[in-house]
Length: 232
Image (cartoon, rainbow, N blue to C red; front, side):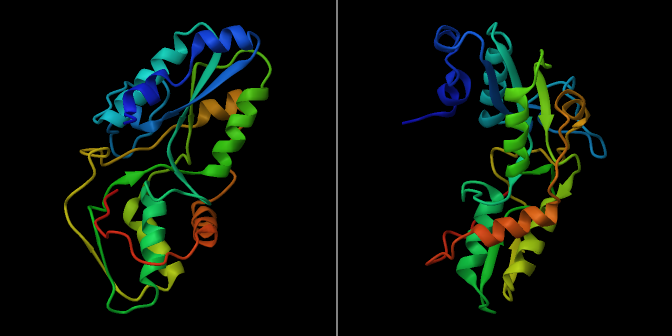
């Protein structure tokens, strides 16, 4: 069985990379989950304390520590919540999209979701890909960690409602107070992306609405509804 710890922590094989391509730059994808809960109304800079609350954030942070200490020319891109075309059903945007596709226009459909009051920093996957390209090709040294996010906190409920609007969903959305283990007790996440602008000339080029439109358009209709217990 594959667990988070070896995948997130030891995925970059530093010694092999050093021998195979000593002049190459290692670009590692970290996660904003490494910061843990943010203070509402604020943005976390790369210098912010890290305090992940679940195994995902903890193992991603361990990976960041390993990469920044490996002695290679390396940079960690600390990514917010990805959204856009191709989003997997293991994440909230892809999961909600699959549920809405399966529900169709049925007025009796019910989506039972977890607590949608949390704020997250969503970033388009195409902007993440562009940040990786810029990091790989940038001349000169880079900061060890750079935030890659949308730069604004969006309530999860807005994501669900806007996707429901695009779907023409006519059923009922019910939410309870539960939440996933990964996002437990994290009501606010927002990244300061100023350092990436300075180091890479990078800013997100896709709006949140554009990301949702691309997500919805790219999703294939589901043949049946997956389980409807969804949490952010």
